[in-house]
Length: 435
Ligand SMILES: *Cc1c(COP(=O)(O)O)cnc(C)c1O
Image (cartoon, rainbow, N blue to C red; front, top):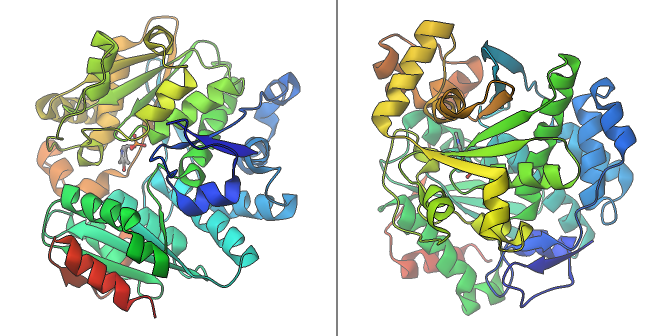
């Protein structure tokens, strides 16, 4: 399979190059030349397959031409070795709990898959080490770092804003050691992201170091997220509830929802999507006006979605040929304030005994407000509530139990390197890593 860039100046790129480069040279995002339709027989029997079996079929459609079957199977099976329960919350609303992986957030799926696929390609090429740069406001850093931990030929640098990441999140990438280096930047998340971008654009650095990105712009990170949309459909089919399914996705950079849209293109019978936003409602404004106007993000209690210029919007546009009408026909949008998110989290606990995290609360609320009587709604519960401990405990006025996996991270010794936010310091630091 070859990949082209959403900016249309680059095409015919191999999967290996798309994964190793992350972003295309014209700064667009890579898209596969073809999104294969899966055969009807697959959908007819999907509920008889295990999660890994169906994910392998999906992975094969994207990556099968470029990765040997045995290797691809191993990558898929190793990525998905945790439960993804579909939990009934009330009426026609279900929660797909994507937080039972190692770092308790859905990003584990993409992080693990990408680390293994990149590892596979690096083994095949010469002995150049690849350096993964990732800026994080919390969850991405931990999922990527844990996915890549111990993978040979790859070193990961996690850049995070000093004092702006929750203590639990921080220990998930500062205590690992080995091939993971945490860089504590004296600045904001935007500063971290700017440092990473400048590094990719710096000719001198790129001549001495092989650099790539592990954010959801990377095809190896976002495409595997389509697996669990198929799994959701299969679970609902078992319950005889697979008609008129609405998928509601708490969205920030729109990687997760884009993976679902790819699933639909492959023939997955989902009725429609809801992109659920916090106050950063750039996509909702686009739906309303037909004009895409990025603006600086504002901070909210669902902070993994504090994005003012969603990178995967370019893929959504490309998928629908740039047609506002076609996009609006399949995706609707909502936006909620912190007060509404808190209210919803609290009410859901009281009324259904179900504890949401602030991101899942946005998704649940959108279904409560927008689901029609004949529809079945599934929202993606993207992180474990304990990852946002203080916020959640303050809202429900109760203690939240911290899962063992999280407690283990908290026992480790924090190690990070402090850096100022100017590019020269970061560049000099990276240069010392080249030897
Ligand atoms: C990353 C993240 C999101 C947003 O996902 P996108 O793919 O960026 O839209 C939502 N919730 C949580 C908890 C996240 O970590």
